[in-house]
Length: 289
Image (cartoon, rainbow, N blue to C red; front, side, top):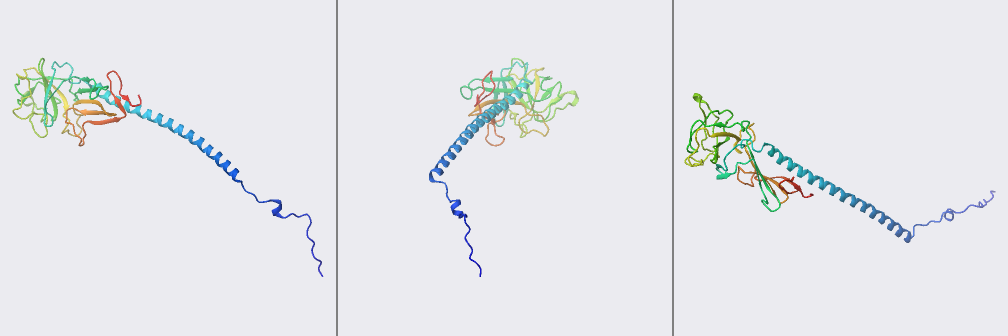
């Protein structure tokens, strides 16, 4: 007969050795407060860092916009006056189907203070874009009205669509548009300037834009480059007569040879944002200074 087993002495039940217990409510609340304080500290550092980043990025963007505006104006300023240097006329008379009769000062650069709003100036830049723009040629005969044929001593470089400036000391200058390439029949260069759909800068027959008495033999003729419409492929850029000014916080550029329009191509067009002023003697001012 088997003997009954005796209980082992000295063994302690598991539950007695490792009594079960959790975190008290106070401990949980303390842990939550410490965690929230840590999150607040991290968020504060993040927000300060993000604010500095936005300030730095915004300042860099503003300075970059001002630089783009400055480079754009500088590009036109470098060519300002090509074809206009040495003129002895205070006004340029012209015509277009969109502007009608117009007159402007044939100056390389014109700065109009406090325009269109106080505190900022408008810069107007004009120049020829023709490779022959600095080589005027004389007329070979007198001409009374803008309808008359144009005969020149040299017609090289005059192409269909080019704007042609006629000038003579003490008289107003005039602007016409070539309707065909210059030709040289019998040794006499002739440039046609017939009005039509492809030559909107020629006045209608019977409309004279020349000054009283017209121009005499020897009056100078300058190629100002293609008209700002009807360009043929690979032609040079059109004659420049461009206004730079501020509208709101945008640097605007207006092609003054064309009428304003909100239909593409828009005129005037915004070049860059974040520019608040153009002041004579200063670079374009950004909204970050």
